[in-house]
Image: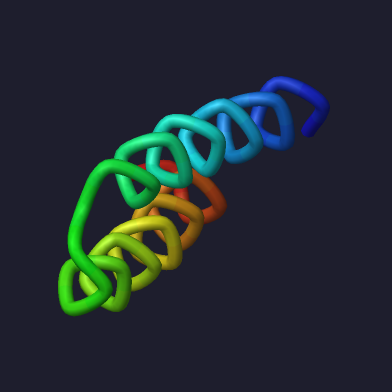
Length: 45
């Protein structure tokens, strides 16, 4: 469980860093990607 939480936080941090370099239009897509990555990690995909 702890590994999954760390993975989600790391993935979220990477996506947030990428979002900071993108246009405002791209930020929405990056936030979606973070949500998808979180879902995948929680369901073990």
